[in-house]
Amino acid sequence: MHTAAPQPKAVAKMHVRQSRAEDVYEQLKLDIAEFKLVPGDRFTENEISERLGVSRTPVRQALTRLQQEGYVEVLFRSGWRVLPFDFEQFEQLYDLRMVLETASAQRLCADGERVDRALLDQLISIWLVPPAERSNDTAQVARWDEEFHCKLVAAAGNAEMARVHRDVTDRIRIIRRLDFTKQARIDATYEEHGKILKAIQRKRGDQAALLLRAHIQTSQAEVRKITLHQVHLARQGGLGK
Image 1 (cartoon, helix red, strand yellow):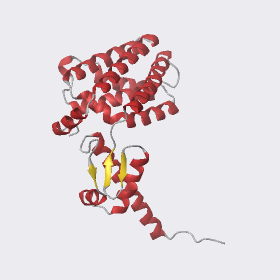
Image 2 (tube, rainbow, N blue to C red; image 1 turned 45 degrees about the vertical axis):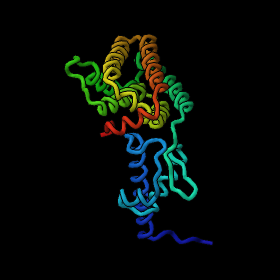
Image 3 (tube, helix red, strand yellow; image 1 turned 90 degrees about the vertical axis):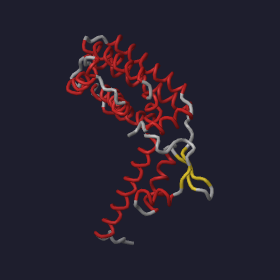
Image 4 (cartoon, rainbow, N blue to C red; image 1 turned 90 degrees about the horizontal axis):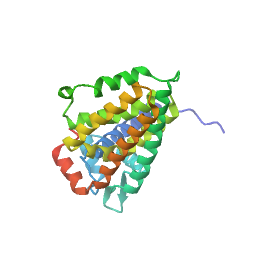
């Protein structure tokens, strides 16, 4: 039996619904990453609907997607809740990140045809600057740090490695942001990123990989110290602003 194709108006409405659900999804994910919603927070679909000015349908679609990705859970007859941190999963993601980034550092120093030198130059212009020109904006440095690692992998020229790394980055973003609530960590990040880039410039693959491993392990150790109290302090301090 032949099924009639959807009419243009019906297709347009479907795209609008999908677009709104995507917008709600991105906003809620940002709210979690910026600690406007923290682990343990409870809310209803109506509250989100009113705050974002959309109907409940895209809100429910967005929350279902976030539930599948392990950010929230639905509570029987009482709305939704932001899930507590899964530190065992974070450990595994950090291990995977370490494998991807150290392999990329080795590729960058091998000077293959697929290496994107323009991306490396962008990183050099941000991180290899005099101390007086360094940023003290915690939110900005957090974003730059994430971009440093993503661009480092992307510059190595393997699109599949870069795709997997972006997915890992997305899943650990919330916990990494907490690593930039202390000025000492910002200073250390500048120093460590600078050393990694200098090793890559000198084509010292083993050294670059070792520096990256130590850098990631330091961040991983900081993650282990994170408590719910720090999460609430980050929200009060407006880390994501």
